[in-house]
Image (tube, rainbow, N blue to C red; front, top):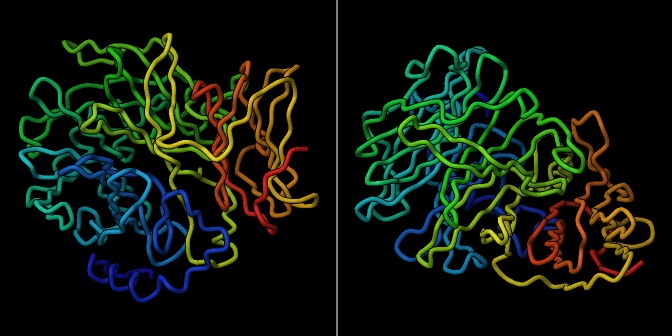
Length: 438
């Protein structure tokens, strides 16, 4: 599709004509996937007129990453999803090589989105922040004033070609956006933008600058307040391994702290990996009309084998189950939006297998090491990543008392001790995904 001019209308027509060609052998039934094509980061996760809206990075024309569109779906319960028309296509000069990640917010009963326009001119990258809006929640208009922020608006110490993934929020009657960037010290950072009207924006601050061990670039930031704490989510590239954490080449990290709103700086107090499995990246949150802070993530990470693409099944990528976030005794708790199929009470060691004797994923609890783990080393169809070290086995160190397990056609999500820790992984079995105790 090189050199192609993309439009929303053409994307919707392609989906309608070709979605019946998708091979559903591995396609999840309990997790969100697109009708056809490639998906990655969740975008624009928001409540609008009593329904949950989920946008996502989307390339309908192949099961590999391509010029990004925004796919779109909605739900009344975060379980059953209705596919909607494609919301954005890279159809303007300022987003001609992709409508990258962003977010949504509701103002005056109008749905606003802020996203990154990606431009690649023979390897010279520019990333620009843009605004679009919708009065019906389906059809979007990009404003005439785009782009609203560019690399030229950033301070000299930042690398202007790395400026993406805006996440909108409102505080004290003013609108803000946290945006990922990269510092010339080769560390990730988050910048804060501000606006009175969602149209006119200005640079406010470097909200948080990372440390050397915390990765050279952060993606998909998300700031919010939860149970009285300031919270910041980022997805770093090459966060240094530390015990049972940050083994994936790309991680997702939850920071708590406070904001100095005079200086507009985030002051971190705690840092932890959100999920200790192999496939969890780029989470985004919303707050719903019940006051719940809910998170969803791409159930995948970069650089990994995706067998639905290798085998030309015409789809790739899924979202995790949505998770309700709260704190208990100062610890982050992730509660699934509905109960899993399996509740396992822990009494000493336990080992479970999904598959059969020759092709299976193993998970369980090692009571001596106090580790809940997922092990993909025994799968017939190997999943290989770009990490220098093997990630087929991932674990979290915890005194486990109970596991809640969600099993789908190609994925497992484990919630330990009612959400004190989680592990998420994908797999591609050549046999039926049957659970049995070893």
